[in-house]
Image 1 (cartoon, rainbow, N blue to C red):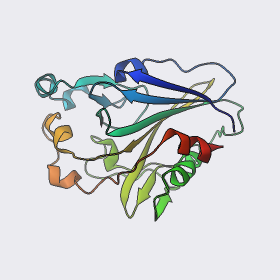
Image 2 (tube, rainbow, N blue to C red):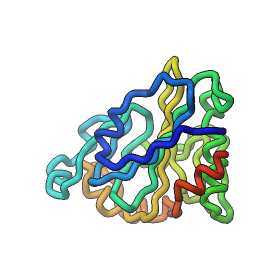
Image 3 (cartoon, rainbow, N blue to C red):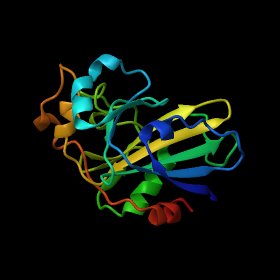
Length: 209
């Protein structure tokens, strides 16, 4: 598969404001955030955020146009990429539940992490999955011995699909928890949720190829 690749540095707000292109070419956007941001899923209420804590910590609050729950983006601590697939592309699937499986498969190859599994079942929820993205597990996402390694959210229009994907290079839930309004999880409840990985663009492109 051939992807038009774009590497961009900037804020999470600018990235999430990008419209879904109408071009017939599949694209890979590799994002390098320059400022920390707490990103909310499209359906999450503003009331889950402690705005004072975010302001004090210098963390932007941003809303994405795809589903899922809150994600904290910290420069240097995440690998974030979007895959844009136009309708009719060989990777396009009408079945939303199966549409992201191939992304998980490519990520497993790119990361080279032993014991990785692509989740091919329905959404798995937990006590905090409606609040914290990596506390749940969706189709196409990747786990390592029960810990979530790759998160994916999906936005679909009549023109195509945008898959927003994230791997943590470092995971410490303390800052994330401090930015949420009560009721919120104890840090210990989130400590073991996430597996970290060093995802690189060249390895991802080779795996997608």
